[in-house]
Image 1 (cartoon, rainbow over the protein chains, first blue to last red):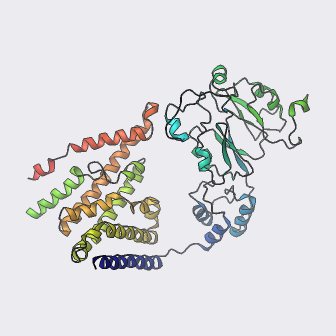
Image 2 (image 1 turned 135 degrees about the vertical axis):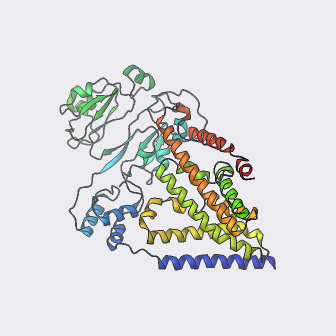
Image 3 (image 1 turned 180 degrees about the horizontal axis):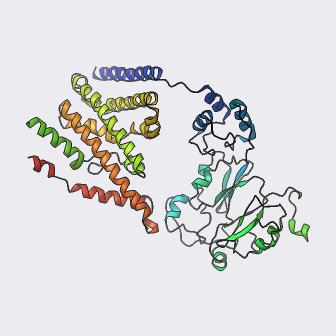
Length: 277
Length: 199
């Protein structure tokens, strides 16, 4: 009998709470801007945060309020940006296609392990313990925090480092914000070459830490005809606004840390070295 | 006069001696999570105090006139949780409609209070201590103020920590926890003071 009373009582309380909530949600409903609703329907709804807002709802609200660019949704590509511009009646803006890029090539053969790490198996935890077990203090730790954060399964961990499937990458930048070593950058999809190293130690030390490290020799800086490459803190940095897609930097790099990403004038899979020679 | 003195003792001991965060260790999650910036910490403190007061005002009569009358004191926890969750949701809707600025300011913290153990703790402890309705409300106000005080104090401390050089292994959560333990130790010093001043 007691259990029946308790059951009925709880049911009554729950029902009352439900009804109260319903009444209040009707009474105090905040009517949404119809524009916001239409914009929200255009957005992909994956709440990745690439636009810099908390989610698709937040971005839609900001768009409806005005003064915000319609091209911030990278996963939505040009199609979504155009639809939003049509709804809001504002000028169309080009979407900058970006893909995530892991600036580290310190795979198991190139780097060594300083200590056996048996703690919590995440990059974040490992990097808190004296910067992680790897010989290179700047490189990928390989526990896959970025892969766990990726909403589109574009990242896989292979040979101790993260590798990104650019065809799947949405360009949301969640992995960039997750990486405790901050080695993931968002590259323009048409970037010609990329420096696949983050080590800022001087040449000898960098080489000792990893066979594939950038040693800051400045060969690429001298070779680049457009002056797009500068070596800063022992690491080559490419300015993509000046890059002319010539590919010279890749050929002169002695350690192979400058990687060919995309060259519009050259056929796919062609060895640039032989072509220039 | 005697009654007034009792209320002052209840209020002050709730703020200092039995501080919910620093002495009873309830509501640690927002204490560590939202104490990075002063304005956010203060906002969270005010929101929690509001919800505490509202929750006590509703749960005390329910305990006294419904649960006790029906001899179902054992349902206390689950009923209180349900009531607090509903109250927070309703408060959120009210704020959204009536004061969008405050709603925006509190942001994600308001729904977080739904599952805050400090709120549940206050309502249950008021019943356990056998307080009357007025005493419960005063004690709740004290708990809310105590929470606010702890949040504001700790956010100040954290901004100092943020600017100082910390050895690498202690950076982040480790040093925050150590700092929290020191603040808690400092509050232990209040033990017995309030009763002796007024007693």
